[in-house]
Image (tube, rainbow, N blue to C red):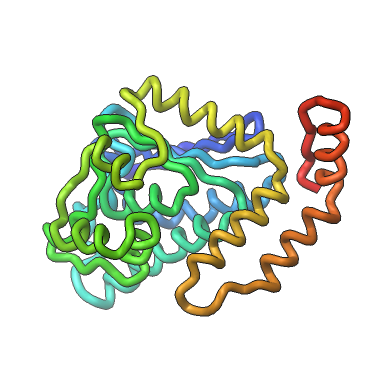
Length: 262
């Protein structure tokens, strides 16, 4: 039975669930094919302010790729490149999203699952979370673009340890290493924390959030210098927006602002 990606949006918050519990929510090929379209819905819907990623069931956020498919669709270099192209398309869609992403991590968060968490803006982990990069345990290469995601969050020295040893890190250790922004005791606390952060983000000015996302993305670029003109255009859009006027008015009138994203 193939996995699925249940998706719902309400009150400005979209929630996307990795749902393949028989495989610890591993991502199969059909899920990889569906992800870009779902992320495009988030990007194109102005009513959606925030995306929350989570895993179904009790045991995992996402254990990476569904390795049970590899003999059929990733058994040689040519097949691997076709499969990897699916992953790149989904990763580029998530990285290019100008809306904040929150990863609510419990249980296993490995390989591609860890990459999705690391590409998120904020990560909340339970104490029982298990984060790691198991590629060397499977005889797989960990590609440059994937290692760079680990380096960006964990730093080069720690990324070497994570990738070369292929070991898993518990929630406490992940929090100490900066892989998690917040540590919570259990899944109930995880849902509460993720909902609270998502609601807080959804109340902020969408254009300001987009401008910040662009700056963070440009600051992390390794293929070229940061695009200062692009960052400036997003900043100028904030200055020219109705939301900037609303923010000033709300401060004067001592009331919460009502941002519209324009």
